[in-house]
Image 1 (tube, one colour):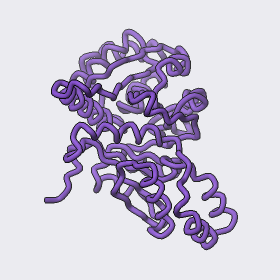
Image 2 (image 1 turned 90 degrees about the vertical axis):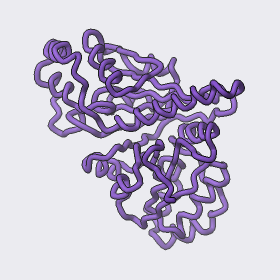
Image 3 (image 1 turned 120 degrees about the horizontal axis):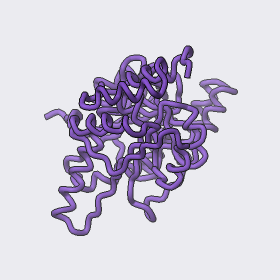
Image 4 (image 1 turned 180 degrees about the vertical axis):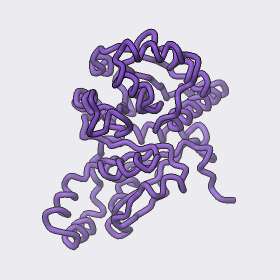
Amino acid sequence: MAYDLSKRLVIGLASSALFDLKESDEIFRSQGESAYRIYQREKQYHPLEKGVAFPFIKKLLAINEINPTDPPIEVILLSRNDPDTGLRVMNSIQNYQLGITRALFLQGKEPHKYIQALSIDLFLSANELDVKQAINAGYPAGQVLKSHIEDDIVNDPELRVALDFDGVIIDDEAEKIYATQGITGFHQYETEHANEAHKQGPLTNFLKKLSAVQLQEQKYSEHSASYKPKLRISIVTARNAPSHERAINTMREWGVTVNEAFFLGGIEKRKVLEVLNPHIFFDDQRMHLDGTTEILPSVHIPFGIRNKPSDPI
């Protein structure tokens, strides 16, 4: 029987998100492909340094202990390397004992073309072009930005995931209203549609699958007294009352529950995130992420009106 990915939380991961490839990329840019190939062969048993998404992926895969024979989480490497130069990446994965066994080496081809075939709920890469191609094709993707990271799984086994709401979990319908009608029109529109669920956004399925994993953790902990659920999910949004109601009703209709929701109404997100200390944060606005990369792993979702050149906001 084929290995079924459809019911698992599947993360597609570029090596640029998992590891720090600054040195390797510099060799490729300055000396060309031949020198790069020689360099990677010479270094193939030298583990790469940890990248921005490393702590998130490591903590996420640790949850698979609740069902190791039928794991709820799958991480698949989607690399622009060819198999030869990509061997160092796989050796590094093995060195760090990450539970990643499946990989695609594409020799420069676009990874987003394989997202649907692999039932990927989120594709992470440091390559801005790859992420934008995925988003433009209608797939869930985020650009991992150069950020501060701490690999603290021993002292802090909890996994905290924080997401913006508009343009990330849902589409940009409400943000378009805000752009054309201002805050008053936005609140009026959201109040009038409070009982109508929002349309899905780029990370809707990712959130749904995260929530499903959290339920599996809870059920497992009921039968295993020594296990403490690890995953915590938070919404951190610039919305505030009365627009909070539609957001909550949307998640209810989707059958999604989150641990915390911060309806900040224009308060700087960084101040709250510094206390929350998530292991990864997703937002569609670079202006918010510019303040978070110094303190935590940050991911840009280049979706919707906020990311169009003509964006008036």
